[in-house]
Length: 86
Image (spheres, rainbow, N blue to C red):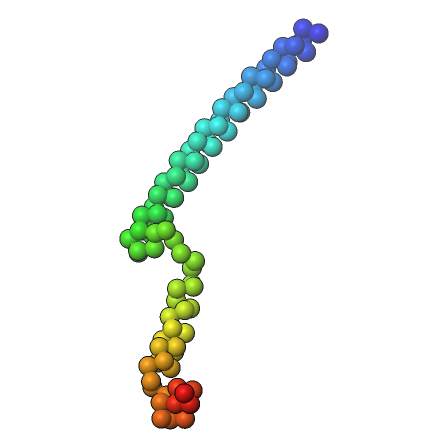
């Protein structure tokens, strides 16, 4: 019985050491995440995208807006296009 208690005490000590190592790695990982998050925020701010917008949406809408602006600017008047039909 004494031998089993000593064995369990050693196992507990080993597990506690392992737990401390894992906690240290978690803290180190969290510091890395915090640092990378700050770097991303700084980059987004430099690019004028803070708060960040949906990626790709901004670029996809510009050509459509240009087409709409050309169509509404009178470019089709007198040519039988939609604007000329009004």
